[in-house]
Length: 83
Image (tube, one colour):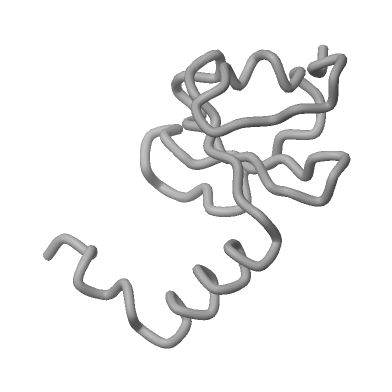
C-alpha cells in the first residue's frame, strides 16, 4: 500500500510504504538488526529498522543520502563507532 496522494513524510509508518522493495544494504553479523532502505517513486529514499518494519520511516532526498554516504566514506562518522 502506498499513500494515494503521493505524499511521504518523516515518521510515517513504514508499513504505509508497502512491504515490497525494501533492501538491507548494510546487513551484517548483528543478529538480524539492520537498516532497510526503499527507493520511493519520487526519487527519495526511505529508511526503517528491520526489527520494527511497521515503525516510523525516515525519508531522505537523494542529495541527503549522497552527502551521508560520502561523509561516512571520508570518516566523518567514525566517532559513532563503539570500541
